[in-house]
Length: 396
Image 1 (cartoon, rainbow, N blue to C red):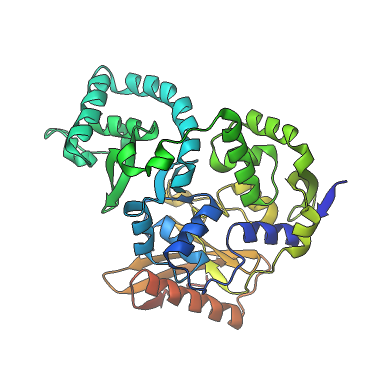
Image 2 (tube, rainbow, N blue to C red):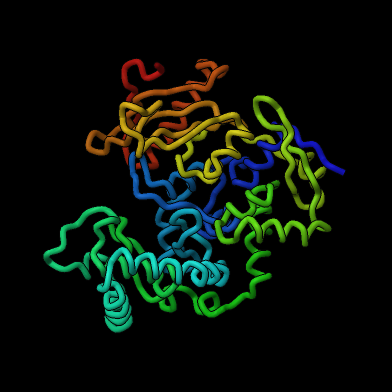
């Protein structure tokens, strides 16, 4: 029997699984932070610091007692988290490292051949020299290996040793031991990862089961394509085979979409009816989300569930942008209600709000604007400025 899921219930299930249904003021601490990241599966890392870097914004939006020093200790001291690739650079629980070895094995040969063609004959020598340098001399940053005459630039102008560092990291030989001014510090993975995780091995079936089961637990409901895309570890074919092999554990559900309301077929674990009935109503407060928030990572899913079209316009020419360089989505309860363009002007000590756009049908009521102001002042304190400054005509 197929179980119908209303659009409201579907949104609430997804929000609960993504850590956005609980009150954000409960004491978190370091242990609670690790549990949060394990429940999310990963937290994307990004260097842009318009307000605060993406990983910090993602965690703060879920719990506003989050402290950046706790995350640093979990990565650099406790080694409970490591940094690697999902669909992009992310912070991942170290217990997941054995499953990432399958990514290393799959990507290594393709990447080696591609980067050899890119860097030419010097790449193999740089590969060997870089690995030996770190093995004998300890952790390095890319700048430690750059020749004096190299002109810095984007990834297309990496010096051979920087390319070697990235290849060795992508294939698991190296790990990120920490960051200094957001620059990566590379070391041998066996010196960074706890031995019980670095040395563990899993077979292919366990690997696929981890990726698909873990994705479904964190999404609540999904198609096989969404299962494959979540960690970006397995192929759609592997996810489809996993669904077929585990049908005795799964319920068929039909998810009502936003807008036209058409139902979309998906799967959930057995007990989907109870899952729907128990879907909690999130707090009514407004939360500002990072553009890289996991709620938004699958743009098509976000649009189907919330009727909210979003793209990051960092790489869009200014004259073609619909909103702005780095615009933050706004979540109120179980709805995405708009977006806001703002920047932490640290020299001036303010969070400068340039413009607000509310979605069609969302009123700029006094109560809503008060809730938004309260949230913006919390963010201002989090990113180390004294208050909020609104531009003239910021409401458009």
